[in-house]
Length: 468
Image (cartoon, rainbow, N blue to C red):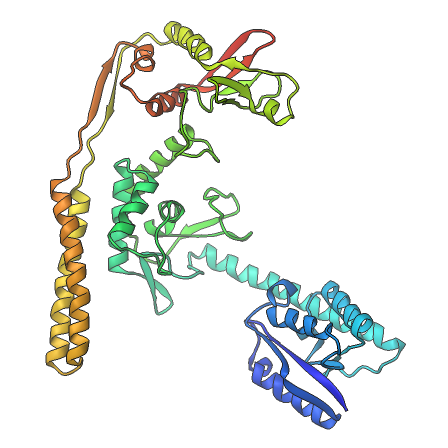
């Protein structure tokens, strides 16, 4: 008697007839009629996934078992060949491996094929048809999703701030309050790291129950869902490319959480920050010169980076891709640029760093405290009406008491919070760059506002400044 393994795969678009139970019953019936034994340990099932090998853990486990000595089964039974693999390439690779290394055949119980030379052609045709069906289905699904996107229908899990009610987005009040807080605080020039730290400190979690990160907040600030629109990218996830030309943005049917004016204000700040800090730069990196990120090699066009000995050098030369050294003292370059500034910029100006406003914090925490009080009333009513036991009431009360204490502590801190504003008048641009009381960070940001790039050519002894 032959021993068999059963492989069952169910994708998300399968009908009831291809359910795991239905497939297994058919496989058992076939085995019984043909004198084949099936052990429970040799039943492998992948549910709710496609036919791609990399995403099928049970399939890979079965292949590993087939290669063991002695082999645990002689044949693999599948409901149809497209259950084994929808890719002709995958099918050929794994069938060849099973046949040559283990002498194991794959049998489709619904597609009868004789074991002769014509079977090769017929089996290939069946698998090619299955692959064509899979590719065609993917195209049709994509067409349907594109049509939904153009109609403004939201097609993924509800974003933070919303929930689904009758298959439509509805505002989740508590989360929506956090979204408004994030937008307002960012509009007041608070950075992503500080925002993430703040919401984590007051115990706010993401939809998945995780802590907030810089990228979480960045995604929220760039999601048009909060102004009543939808965004869908046919080529896949945005991967932080929020301006992807492939993305479809349409007017949705849901209620917005923030105003278009606030959205515009936030995105004006984002645009400015991108000018100041180009992609891939690290905001937390130490700045040792206000020229950081501006200087370019006159030979290869690469960036000049700061060395440990107060010199700058072409990054390409340091890595071996540029043949000409551009090593130069940092202070010499700063002096040369300042000489040009003295000629170009002669007008006086003022620079200000505004006092941080805590009114949004105070409002948010006050509202949160009111919600805790409402919860306390509800758990007391549930206990008095006999819905909750005394133990349940005590446990819920302990949780809310701790939450109340933490919120009150943050509320008191928000009341007493005080920030000093920085405001200074400068006779000219040079006065700012030579003022020891102005941080290198502010100087570097100012330089990026004024200059696009500076090309330094050591061989020709020239410094070419490209202004914005």
